[in-house]
Each structure stands twice: as C-alpha cells, then as structure tokens.
Image 1 (cartoon, one colour):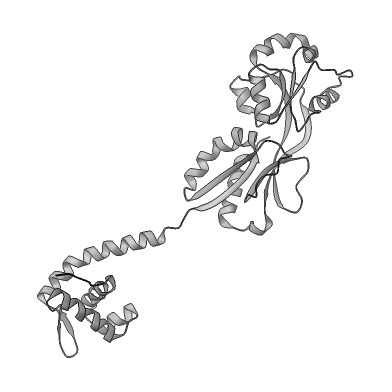
Image 2 (cartoon, helix red, strand yellow; image 1 turned 135 degrees about the horizontal axis):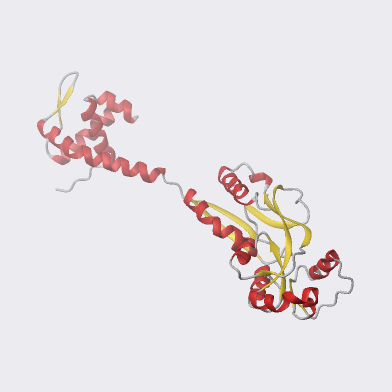
Length: 294
C-alpha cells in the first residue's frame, strides 16, 4: 500500500501523541483543532488502524499508536535536527582586498593561515597590483603605498618604509671592497614607478657626481628583488617588507645608507561599509598583524 502522508501530518501525530490533546496540538502548530483532527484521521486511513482512542474530553494512544509513536519519534527528531542544521548554515561571506604585489607575497599571504583558521566562513579574494600607478579593482579594503594619508576614506596608517641598496651574496663579495665605486661596476635596479630613486639616494648620501653605469627599470618590486637575487645588479629594496630576503641570505645589504622616503603603507576602507562586522574583523586583524612593523 502506498503511503502519502506529509511530514506535517507525521509531526502533527507526534505532537498529539506527546501532549494527548488535539486542542493543544493545534495551539503548538498554529493550526485549528479540526485541521489537526483531519490530518490524524488521514494518517490513520493510510496506516489502516486507529492511532488514538477518542473519548469525550480526552484522547489516548492505542496499542498500535504507541508502537508507531515509539518507532517514529527518533526518526522525527533526527529529521528536525538535520533541518535545523542546514537551515542555520549561511553561505560564506565574500570579502575582497587589494594590495601591492610585494606586500602580498612577503607580508600578507604568509600570515593568512592565521586568519583563515579563525574565520573559515569567510571567503577572501586578494587582488594584487604591481605599481601604485595601476588602478585596482573595486574591493572592500585596500592596502596601498602612498606619500600622504589618503583623503575621503577611512584609512589607517600601518608603517613607513625605506629602501636598502642590496645585491646577492656573490656580487656582494665582489663589490663590497669598492665602496661607492661599486655603483660604476654593476647595473642599478629600480622599480619603474620610481625611476629616479637611485638619484635621490645619491643626493641623500651626498654623492656629488653620480653617473651610474646602467639603470634597469622593472615593472614590479618582486621583479626588482628577484633580479637582484639572481645577480643582475644592485637594487633598492623596500624595508621592512623584504625582511625574509635578508634573513634567508638571498640578499645582502651593500651599503648602510638607506633611501628615506615619505612612503607609508595605509589600510583604506570605504566609509559606507566601515561598520560591517565581517569587514571590521578583517580590519582589526590587519592592524594587529601589520601595524607594529617598523
């Protein structure tokens, strides 16, 4: 025999079997007593036996009704728990952030493990840009390198940077004894967004006649650091975000003098979305993770 009872009818029976009152069942399920009576009667018809013994002002379970209730109750409880579990699940929150490529690879991504473990329900998209002249996609947050605090946005200063003259260990051994004359013996590497960085460094150091052998411009800071690591020349490397390159010995500081700049990293968020809890969580994590570097 085919059984067509709905989940609502089975739940109606379980509630009635528990409280032994069609009126109370109707109240709990926001139904009319006649609707409860109809659903119970339909279930009895499909099963082929009476579930309740109906008296003038009371009901009680029949023997078959008791057996059916005892078999059905754990199934209904498991089903309701399953429904509550899936009903409570929310789709993951989607957040996006843009930042310079070198910052992402050297600072942000290595620490992202901690963030993902704390917030497994947030999907994060990281957009990288090679140069400050590039226009990033619209993202919820942005980390940018600028010489002044961005206006018209909610922004947080992270830390300033300077630039260190560096090369790989092999070239370091060759050039160190030469002092500043080394600048005439090897190409000077620089990010194309800062084509005059070496000239500014020479001005700060006090080199009056600065005529480098060759200047090579590359389109990303990662390319600059990588080229220097491979022995192409001497590069101006941003500090402190290049810490791992020096700690591993991939790069060596050739001169103690650094190029001081007004550049600082800032975390920028849209004012209209500043109070969104999930964005604020990411902001607080970034500030606690990166703001103290100097």
